[in-house]
Image 1 (cartoon, rainbow, N blue to C red):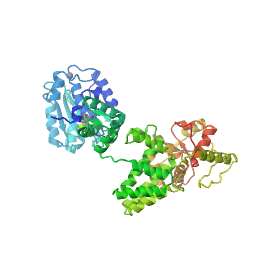
Image 2: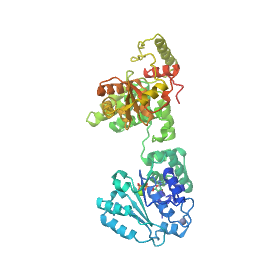
Image 3: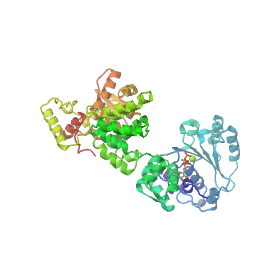
Image 4: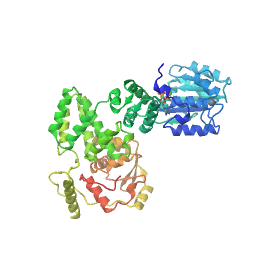
Length: 527
Ligand SMILES: Nc1ncnc2c1ncn2[C@@H]1O[C@H](COP(=O)(O)OP(=O)(O)OP(=O)(O)O)[C@@H](O)[C@H]1O
Ligand SMILES: [Mg+2]
Ligand SMILES: [Zn+2]
């Protein structure tokens, strides 16, 4: 009988569980020194190993011959638990046994000492499904657990658990598994199954699975039923991923200001009955990917695509500035919204693309030709040396360069930080910012801010939002939002220590000012 891959390849030892060292290493260490808790809580996104680890743990606490915290898998207890003949390990699906009576029954049973094993282990899967009464009954047992009982609670929805339960469990958070780790495991599985798979195809399966190993193995299963040589094309057709070359083509048209070419592509897509709202969202995702490539160090951890697509996208992203990219995303989002509100989709799509292709559209695409680039740079430099704003060059209507702004020194920054007080209006500022730039506003989700002298110092854990603030247009939107809310003009700074604290040398400062003026320059200091 055929056994589905994700069952066949369920890890039997902690050592085989991938991508969760914060769980497996900790548990192994604790078990190796015989520190066993009475209640464990396994939480985190689906298909990442919660049930798997519950089973391993139930064996590890009972195994007759454990190795460094891992069960041996061979002794009578391990085998008995595996084949279900040892009744001391009980798995309860809380989705179907969620009543108070189910838990009362369990409590009565738990009082008896185990028949064969050292511990009675109750694995309560999907524990968030318990009724309130059942939670209360469970709580009583957790408050005074019999010495021979171990509870393992597993759930994807930890926020649905009462705090009283949470506080009595040792909690472990399972993370989404990194695409590279998933791909490596898929390659291992394929090797065992005598199936060939390219690295790129494995990565694509991983990307579609979005961090869930079970989903990755299910998709691999489906691919294997189609072919025993798994390529990107096999994965693409199996997963129903469309060929995305038209997105690259459309973007090329935008880069080369070829409105007629863009409209032609739209026309042919329309005739293939492509939904225009879908097109708009896909193009938006394409530009989001470009934005991430330009800002994140290892974009492949976030992006769902094959290696060759990523390469192609990287090349394309070099022809676009971050400013332009973000403005494009905003334009596409607005357009998608208008489509949903009933605008004629085809006309809307055409209008938006024509606008994106026009030379005057938000920010500059990077001029292709190096001479043209040098000329712009020289022009701006002479203007700065002359000490004033540049007159705009005809092909670049919005340039105005201010002389380099003096940055505070490291000492000044430290002083500013030591005097900073929390800014209560910060959430209002972010709300205000949503009106002018949703992208910037969302990137500051979860941040806080402080006021110190003339500065608003922002504290955010992601570098991406600071990267956005390097663009003059977004910096202005942020300052405007702050002014509207506080009624005062503030300078912007970063609260936590960063590379930015180093005083920029003249060249770097010049480059950064040219960039914020929208003049494309290569910044050799970056990356
Ligand atoms: N970290 C992992 N390492 C290796 N394989 C894994 C891992 N996580 C999941 N798997 C694979 O996926 C299958 C399902 O995993 P498991 O049942 O443990 O997920 P889960 O976290 O309990 O998911 P759910 O929240 O949907 O219940 C396993 O049988 C195994 O094949
Ligand atoms: Mg599970
Ligand atoms: Zn054993």
